[in-house]
Amino acid sequence: MTNLAIAANGLRKSYPGKDGDKVVLDGIDLAVPEGTIFSLLGPNGAGKTTTVQILSTLIRADGGQVRVAGHDLDRRADDVRGAIGVTGQYSAVDKLLTGEENLLLMADLKHLPHREGRRKAAELLERFDLVDAAHKTAATYSGGMQRRLDLAMTLVGDPRLIFLDEPTTGLDPRSRRTMWGIVRDLVAGGTTIFLTTQYLEEADQLADHIALLDHGRLIAEGTADELKRLIPGGHVSLRFTDDDALKDALAALGQGFVNPSDEDRLTLQVPSDGGVAALRDLLARLDAAGVEPADLSVHTPDLDDVFLTLTGQNTETPR
Image (cartoon, rainbow, N blue to C red; front, side, top):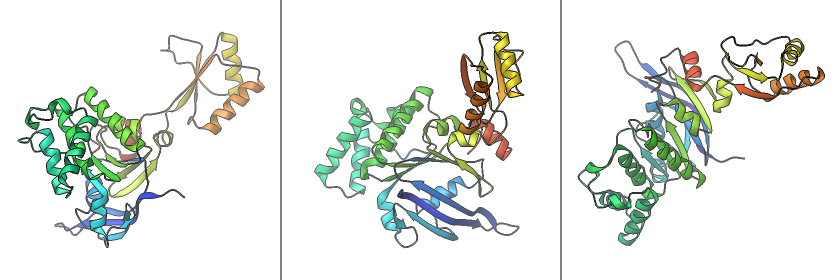
């Protein structure tokens, strides 16, 4: 059985308001396997930040049972804090200190012995490609360098589970992809990542499992491909070498169309969720008719389409 880094059942949280309590989390369940990337998506006010604050011991839940890194969240909060790291949307870097000094400060806060702290700082400066900037103040760092330093500071205590809250906000595409590589390396080494992001492409690229939160409830979850198959718009493109083969395929399948805007008029588009069973059935019907496509490709909606369809929100601000 897969060990879980996070196991939450019936997680609830409300805040008092003028018209009574406002329910922020309405009994959500989470299961995050160790050594994976889990991404929580949702529009503004969905409850993402509240979820992270509860799981990282910053605030208490009103109800539910939660275990984080194997520890009961209510009874063993100190043990949870010792096992996790948190990299928030807003950098915790002290810009008046150098990169090395920021790391040594974190080592002191983690009560590492002096020699161990210096060894750890040197290791992280090398790992995050910050050696040349180690003795420069963080105020002189680019946005991407500051985010790398921020994450390096989180790793001083060797956390088993890291909460990344919008880690690439404001970064240019090159710096964003550098951060993606770092995150993948962390998971390859056994670390678990709980990711919130405003970039749906980021979740698509990184996450092993995605949960979509809206109005305090989980409305969908699964892999990126599974979520894309939840909404219409998917199709299989079949390219043929001549008109006769295309016509035979259309007769065998009983559905499909040629996109009039497509320069290649020998490509048939057949509505499909892109699943294995659907593809197997489609190919079996073509084979029975003696028709073989020259090329096949599966097209599914992207996560922007999923987000917009399931939440009815503007995809530019899923925070």
